[in-house]
Structure formats: structure tokens, C-alpha cells
Amino acid sequence: MILIRFLIGVVVAAIVGLALIPLFVLLDLRAGGTGWGLCNDGFGRCRTSYFAGFELLAGLLVVMLALVLTIGGLVRLLRYLRSRSAGGFAA
Image 1 (cartoon, rainbow, N blue to C red):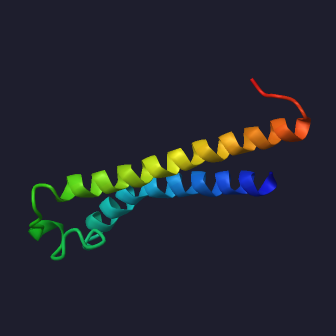
Image 2 (image 1 turned 90 degrees about the vertical axis):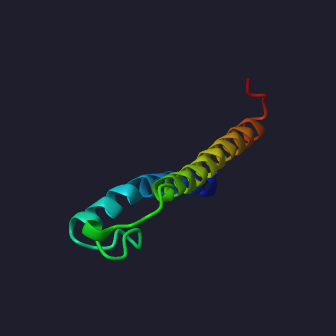
């Protein structure tokens, strides 16, 4: 059960890290960087397609959804193991 709790903590940390990615991209662009490859010539000369931001957002949302579903599965497994070790049935 400790391993499952640890895995839940790792997945929560991954969700927080994933949510911070757009912030770090913007900070990199603000500092004159490439925005992690989003704008190769910097923000002043950034020529991307209209859908580049939406593609990044869609990718982040898909990974975030997968992580949230993983947490749900781990929590269900933890509840099952608790009810099984208690010898009763959980409602």
C-alpha cells in the first residue's frame, strides 16, 4: 500500500510539473530564448502556424487526462486493497 501511495504522489508531482511547462516556455520567450523551440528566432521574429499553440495545448491536455485517470485507477486499487485487508466490503 505504501508503494501505491508513493505512485500517487509521483503522478501528482508530474501533473504539477506538466502544468508549469507553459509558464517556463513564456519565461524563456520573455528572456529572449526560443520558447523551447517554439520560436527559433526569438519572440520578435516568431513565425509559427496558427495551430502551433493549440497543438501544444492539446498534447498537454491529453497527457494531463492520462495522468488524472492513472490517479483514479491507483486510488481505486488502494481502496480495494484496504477493504480486502480489513476483511470487509467497502461501500
